[in-house]
Amino acid sequence: MADSNFIDYVKILCRSGKGGAGSRHFHRAKYVPKGGPDGGDGGRGGHIILRGNGHMWTLLPLRYQRHIFAGNGESGGAGRSFGKDGEDKVIEVPVGTAVFDADSGQFLCEITKDGEEINLLRGGKGGLGNWHFATSTNRAPRYAQPGQPAIEKAVVLELKLLGDVGLVGFPNAGKSTLLSAVSAAKPKIADYPFTTMEPSLGIVSYRGDRSFVMADIPGIIEGASEGKGLGLRFLRHIERNAVLLFMVPADSDDITHDYEVLLREVREFNPDLADKSRVLAVSKSDMLDDELRDEIAATLPKDIPTVFISAVTGQGITELKDILWREINSDENRAVSTITHRDLDVRHRVQEEDDFIFEQEDTPEDEMPMTDEEWNDEFWDEESSVNPD
Image 1 (cartoon, rainbow, N blue to C red):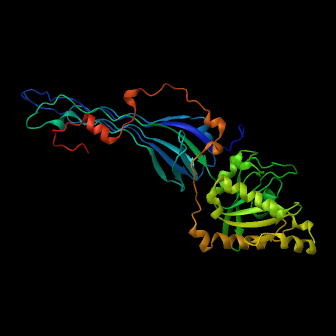
Image 2: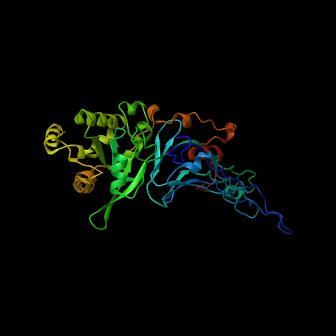
Image 3: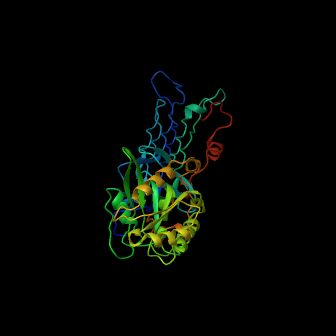
């Protein structure tokens, strides 16, 4: 995956801007012997903002931009002039990107719409100028607030493809063949395992002007939830699907056993996926005669819809579309959230990204972030009648 343009997991370091210091200036003018304090407020630091971009499909640009720092606010000036706000930094990401704390793995936020913006890190507040602190008993305050420090955080961005139907199956189960048969997508198809090395999407037309999106991920193997094969790297993409389509080829030794293995791997990766609607498709069914098909059907699970299909001959494709459309729009499916998130743990992380070291000096202790309460307690004059907010 190192040479692929499809990057769905990246670790970056973000830092908002620190607030500008308030000014301690006093008014100086001819014939104005006691002009009084007129120091302006400092500008706020720049924010780190996430913005959804519907035209992006990969996190590749962030692979080469590991450090994203917003601008610092400028100090206040004379005449109660405000300092300039720091420049905001906007990070454009594909729709379907989830953000996690790189240290704790905690889920922070997600981008689900084109143009949606989320303030990931807030810039530091600017300090108040000395004119705020003038009172009847202290008419010449010679102090002002410093700006609030910046906030620094390492985050993990994880792209999850947005699709209505997610294909789940072992290598060479016919997932890519099905996607190419029902949509205009052109995934790689060959007669060897792990042909699909990255997820792909296809728009499936259904009865007139209706359609739904189908997502294909690389084949998973037994033990994928523990890190075996390529499945673990891409199982995250089916978390965003409304319906899971399990595919088992007709030449399997035990179709029911294979389905249960796939279901177990999905559940162990994320237990919430067990609540999603499921459909079982027996692929390559053109190899079966009617008698053998009936024998196999008698052994299949009864708790989920099942259909025999062949992407080559078109057998069962229309029936499969009908079932999928019904499941996508069912009341039971809408009652269950189609977007499930779990905090990152050791099994879910990409090792080469986790081991990435940011080449920069540690943040000085005096620039470490503090809460608003700590900031006000340390720098606010309790005798002042002016509210800092």
